[in-house]
Image 1 (cartoon, rainbow, N blue to C red):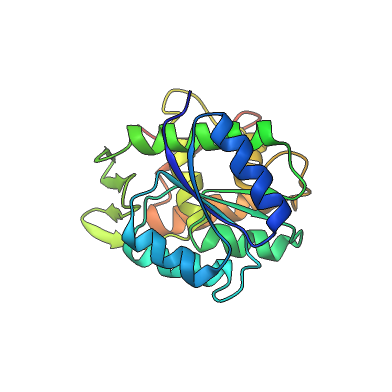
Image 2: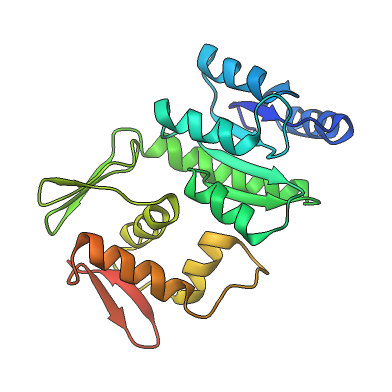
Length: 221
């Protein structure tokens, strides 16, 4: 059973009530807020293990809430759950610091699995710093330094870098990177992964990421 504490920021009464009941049945402690400003206040007044965030909140919309949150708390796991299906909304949410994205309607089993994965990762990464080839990556604060100099990465760029760092002994396929960024069943442009790899090499050094034709990419050791 799960023992984490969640904040659900969702203004749909029917969906919110159903999620609270289902997640509590699985062992989660759930607080439910229907307003963005109220949710933001709760995040600063209490400690949570994860945030389930709808984008279309009254008072303070989900993206603005997320942007403010990441100024003070870069590591809280955040899953966006929203009816907005536009790719630009998903991209903005991930760039603003969300860890995952689920479009409504979704299966509770999938939401629960993603919550478990994110909270396990978050608990296991507290204080974890990876150093390789002059690169220093703090998985908790999302701070990156290359040869001692700070480097700014977008949320999705950091997500790709982290994925590569978590698989040091094997190449990560293009398909795995796409699914990591956008989930299953999403239509992704053919050059999406190429753009991320190019940007990471430009910011962190061309020799850092190796290409294995037909297999994918890995961090050079």
